[in-house]
Each structure stands twice: as structure tokens, then as C-alpha cells.
Length: 391
Image: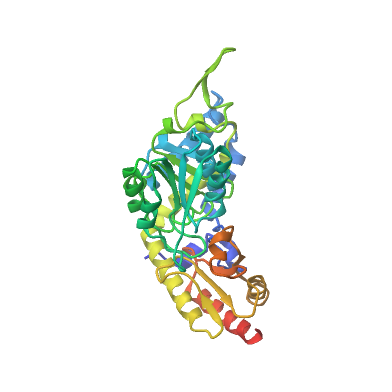
């Protein structure tokens, strides 16, 4: 197991607050920030657009970051498209598939809006959408996904882990079911990559989307879209960097991943992401998963024992959503911040259908990362206990 106190030195903000909003974004470690600073101060240039030494170094370091991400997720660099976030990645799939009226998409009730709205918008093109329900703890039965698939189903799109409930999806089984029926599969790994081992080849999905700024510890403005068959998707954008040849009569696209990455990318962000992924690998994602699970389980158990507190989600959850009876979740979050400098998320978590299922107007969500401690869990419990006395 890694030395958590040594790790915490790489996240200076932890000296100022108790940060339990890792489901929204994690903090970025000093080595990743230093890698971005090196780009700006030592060799800043554009990617893939020059023969001079700075352009070559920029391109090499950018592509090294792609290699690190691909290795970490067990896929190939050619299949790894670098985007600005998971939302863009998912929309690239929604916009890049050639849809016909009568095509069918299956998704679930417990998706983030970013893996829900792109499919709902396809209704404007005559695409039918089936929303598979879940139980009250946010668990989706693969048999229900199977029952929803028809001979017109073109895509099944599900999250790996729910950002509201922390429930874990059996994405490998769902992928097998969907592909057996002739459908492609998109897995939204926003809440899984970096928090638990992810093996894209083992999952077998056609598309895998994740941001860089959550479990992978990278900066905001970075994301990943892994594409099994690049020919299955048309580029959303075209322009500089995507073409091999251009004439007045037409153009010839570059192979993947270049054809999906139009214009100047977030070069420093991607370089920082590469170093952040390396940082996660050095610590060990299995150890990170074990540590986070212990904190999450402990926090959920102790919160549920407080009179007037309701905790949601399954026992094997990855986040801790809860409410204090008689109090608005935003008020609870504000009190925790003002009295104990505890940062938690409150509200609908960009997943209104999921929260509506509970019949509440939002929840408070505590979510943990590799740098959180048992002492911070203690502070959360003490803070919530104090709040229940005010309710």
C-alpha cells in the first residue's frame, strides 16, 4: 500500500480544505503541473506542424502522453482520440454514426446528462430511444438491457459507474449481450478510469469515453475517446491536422486518431494528463481502488447510523450520496464548507432522472480519491452529526 502522507504532499490544496468532491474533479498532482509548466517555459510550439526543434519536442511529448493513456486503458494509440472532456467524446459518437430514421438506441435511467442528452436529441432524426430503468440503488440488470434490444438497435450506451449512486455496471456482460444482438456499445467511464482497473480490450466495447480530470488526475479540458473501429465513425470536425491531402476538388483524411483531432489541441493539458496517468500507475490503481473503497464503505456506514440521515446507493458503492432530513442538500454542503472546510457536491449532479427517481430535490455527495484519509471521514461524520442537531 502506498504512503498516503507522501502522496498528499503532491496536492497542496489539501492543506487548506478537506476535499470530498472527487466525483466532479480530482486535484492535479504537482508532477503533472510541473510537466505543463515545462511545456510553457521550455519548448512551447504547435503539435505536428513544424520541423523545428520546439515543434518536434512538442509533438513527441504529446504523442508520448497518448501512448501512456492507451497503455493504461489497454488499447492502442491509433484507437485513442484525445478530446476536451467525456461530454465531447460522447457527442462525437452521437454525431459521427450515420443514423437512419427507425434506428434504435438503448441507454439507462441512471446516466449523467452527457450520456443521456446526445441520444435524446437523436429523436429529431427519427431515432428511437429506450431508457432502461434501475432499482432504487441505481443498479441496472443486464437482462433488462437485453430485453430492450431490438433488431433495429444500433447502439447501447451505459455508464461504467453511476455518478449519483456509485453503482457499478457489469459493462463486460452488457457489451457481450449488445454485440450478440448486432449493436455497438459505448461505455462512459467517467467515474471508473483511474479509480479502478479498466481494461478496454477485456470489456470489448466499441467506444469508451472518459475525462482526464477525474480519476486520471489530469487537468480540466482533457478527455479521451477510444474507438475500436475508426471506420465506424465519421469525424465531427475537419480542418487542420485531420487531412493528408487537399485539392479544390476534395480532401483525403489522415488515419485515426489524427482524423478525429481537428485544430490545435490542448497541448499542455494532454502533456499534463500523460504525466498524471503515469503518476496513477506509479502508485497502483489496485491500491487506489482498495483505499477509496475502504473510505467509502466506512463513511456510508457511519452516516447511515446517524438519526435523520438517509444514505442512498448499494453496499458496493463508489460514492456516498445522502440527505439530512428537513434540510436542503445545498444548505448541508454550505454548512460543511463554512464550519469544517469540507468540500462536497450537492444538487442533481447533472443527472436529474436519476435523482428524481428518489423523489428528492438533490442529494449531498461525498466522493473520495487516493489522497483522502480516515481523519477526513471522521470530520465529515462529526460535521453531519452537528448539522442534524440544527435540522
